Image (tube, rainbow, N blue to C red; front, side):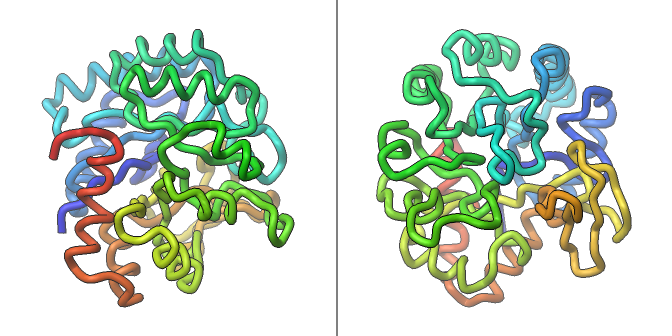
Length: 299
């Protein structure tokens, strides 16, 4: 099955957000990811210093063009720096690099990426988020809400398009009714990005999210980490000392949070198919057609 994964942090030991990332390492990991059956993907850069963005984005654009991978890698997902710095919401990101959303910073990042930012994650409650999201839309960027603690009013006011890995990037302990998960689910205009690796969301939660949003408003992503494609063990992943268990769970035992996924999209599709919630046509929709519609990228 063809798949377009709009959230890939790295793979096969290569971290797309690492300050020391080289073009050769990026291309080596990208080729390995594509060989697993991933048709297209967006390299995802998590919250980083501006120095890293200034070095990383132009280098990635040049590497993609040099390798002729413009179809396979049509853009980028910036998961930050406009997220919440609060514990739990910030997840595996470094809170020291979180910034308030500003149009000026958005434009700098857009230029550094040669206009190829396809998706950007925001905290809905962050000061300046609605204005910056409005500007992102003018630049052709899909705005996603995640790593936040927003309420229903803040989510509605943000004017975004989707929800980054709904059900994750949030504290373990939240109010049972008033929280960003329920508020995101209740907003009918927002598409839910969900990670179906079997660890980020329990099967019953995936079922409920699909039932609420329907196949038209679901996009499956892997949230693949640099440990994707590696054997079980201990790894330094996305700035975290993480453990990859035999069952594929990748987590930081100190922060008690997941550190991305150790699964790539074909495995996520396999797990979702095993739940028998969607037809084959609907699986194609959530893994291929909807990501293209959301990002306005031609198939």
